[in-house]
Image (cartoon, rainbow, N blue to C red; front, top):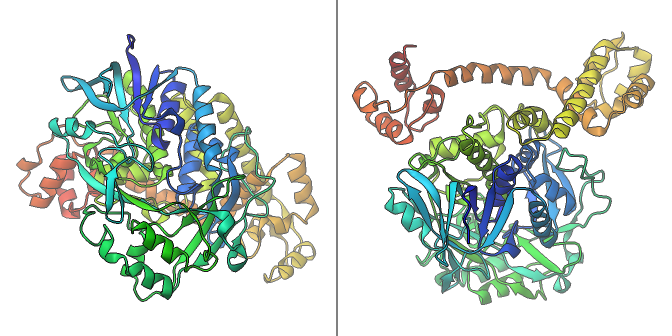
Length: 623
């Protein structure tokens, strides 16, 4: 049936698998996506939203690399918000509420229109090897499909086990069976695996809710969008979300079911996401809190299905129902389906290289929750990087990696392979040392040239980025050169509670003031004329304003990054025997032998490797 040898087989059709398949196919590799259900490609298994704190930056980075997540998000959004606007631009994070059904349909349509990409519906139950190289996959029907590389993106399906109260059954998510065979085969080949847990809230009937008792959460007045591409446009209309709260009564009702909770009676032994705990975990860990937020999120434009964000639970259905009916606005709630927890296999990511290729099997790549992450955005970013590197591997080209000062994606992957994770890993802005450099507004400037160089970002995307960047630099130059007289600027300053001046100032100095934005200066005719003449849109204005206002911070962070990246140029020879270096601490020898860092910089980020250990290594490397 499958006589040809594929360049890349992508196992799984979730967010990681979809981005991986799109990347390899668009770069020219003959690709096959094998997934258990073709109807569920790009499925939003949990909340119907993309982006958020740090996650929005990741979606922008995927888009800048030439991925599809930003385009799909824009084309299926029902609400857009830029979070953290009250903070500095390093913290601004875009987020969209999505139409869940349209989102999956859009992903499928985009993939079907991608050349070089084939599809097959079946469960992959085994892998084929030739020595230490991957050679293909075997499906549950016994069909062998040969390939030069394989990207595993199995999500929560590997030996997945769903828990609702005292009931448990096999499954990868609600209504879908688990996947078996791959973990066992990889364990046979010496891979280390573990178990993790995640959960999801009930889905309810929006017609049964009383929104008048809740706080409306509308989208932005002037919404932006995720993708830098001209093929998407901002929303012209939006749907609101709503917010309500739990109460002591709700908490007491939930506690009544703790003895039947798989989390507390020992049925679930694996670790769940620390930063997205279940509602029972929240009221247990934060017993002093009288209430917790509940976000009421519509699942789409036309459906009445609602996602109860903040009420993730694996308690028995009757307990869930009784407690949720005590929440303000939910007095007459009707369930579509209860919340549940799911346990699944993952492989500690210290077994991977920076390319997401496994260290022990040539041509085998892991991406997504199999690496211990949680979240669509984290999965999708690994998918595109694994896809790019699977293509590079097959084409005998150089690996494609991103450093910590180049992208949040670089931080994510470096954290995973250097530090590992024993709980579901979620990205936060605090994980990045260079937040001012890694802003959501400049992802295209940072990454599109790199993606274009390896053949993923198109000529059109690169040219568009260069045009926008040139306009921003032109506007910065205009502000640096142009002066404004006191009688022109003082009315603007006084109106915005900024001290007046007695002499002419360069406009860049005015814009650098805390209370002054570029919008304030758009009342000044020379600025208005220049912006109109150069046909500058809001993204250009925003880019110029950030670079002027935060020039000092950006320069300082860049200098720090440059200093630290010097250690990236000190390589550690392949197969270096740390046991021979007796002046290293025992912990350092153990950790270094396990992680096998390729540079001194990577070694410096391994927990347990001290500055004195680094000094010893630098001596051995001739530095």
